[in-house]
Length: 348
Ligand code: PMV
Image (cartoon, rainbow, N blue to C red; front, side, top):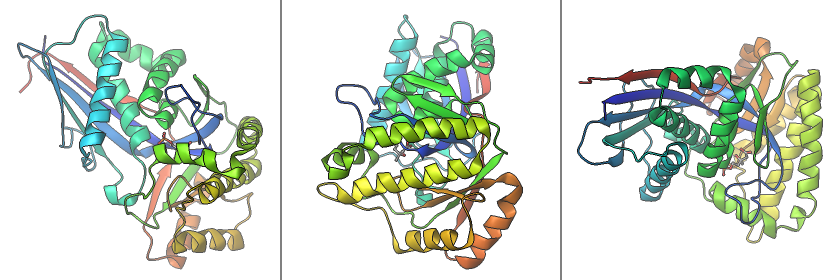
């Protein structure tokens, strides 16, 4: 096999109607449909390099890819195995010929570990895309197809979902809807948006998302969750297409609170709220109306403050003045995963 290198970038995404709860028997198939906003600079850079070798091997190397940005994650044994298992899944699904050579995978996230931002969406999207590039017969055609063919991106998104559910929404943007196996971009008349992430705590999560997906079903509040999220999904789709920011804001608010209520009423219950979380939420409620600011939270204590880009500096200033102790990561809506480079032939 010729020496080969691919470098890709995949952004994270923030859900406005949350994916919470998996269908039994599926591979990360959601109980309810979700919609997210794709980010741009909070991203994973990932490189796959293949060196000629008599037999096939693959390993994850904890180093920043050359040409990439950020910090390489500290994957524990289980994380590394999950990552390599997804590599194997992608290769076997996308190619009928067995791979050859010594494969090295390097990745780095632009958001520090300590930012408390889940990286599985961006990492698995990046890994899926890089694998597809690796096994493509004609790499030029592959690059062109990935750029121009939305159904091809959706196909890779479906495969990526099997590694990490929410990663399927990172292939496109700015707004992506995911329902069962289907992933699709929503046309938007909203102004361009920014996400200000108020980092309340950077510690390791007590309950990981896989555990959260399972445990929410023990809550009495689970009853009706699929219908509630389904109806918000339909309304949010219309709000995005119709350019109604206030509606987006009200739906996002209702849905993240619904999800956190599931956590807090699960058996056993758990909570991601920290003291700072409540302070930031209360402050925003006091000073901003839903027509100006949308708020959401993932399965963590950090608060995502979504505002029109034109107002980004204003809200960043207000938040930093009020909460100088909490770092704020500023990102903007984005268009999804990208191929940054493909090199074939001799490599140093
Ligand atoms: O993709 P997972 O299994 O890490 O689940 C993500 C779950 C949430 O981030 C809480 C919500 C979502 O839709 O992204």
